[in-house]
Image (cartoon, rainbow, N blue to C red; front, side, top):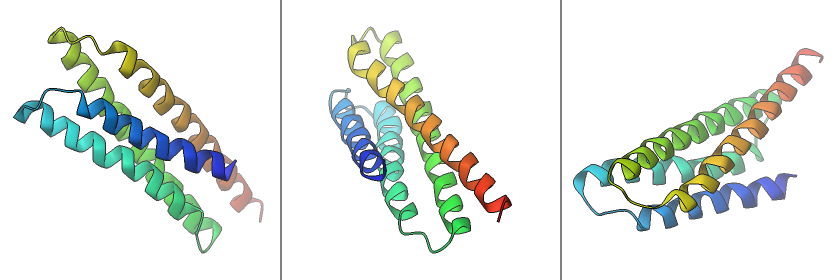
Length: 123
């Protein structure tokens, strides 16, 4: 599962980058694009850091950062998707799998957080 999530979070960042490369190069788009690239790449970086946690509490804190970053990525995907729809850019086929993956990764991380909290409390 660990390697699978490492690969999924890396692929998520790369797929977000590919999406961003297809968007118009304007000041307005660039503001959201920069945020999406930062947050999507931070998901994988922080997940990898969680795998080197020094304790259960450290692991939990790092997972919470992953949760925040994936949620931020999902938010900027939603914003960019709506802007693209307003601008009549037909990129739905690119956005939909990314938004689905963001939600799946969120669910996985939230479940891991709950499990970790439960394990910490039973010790």
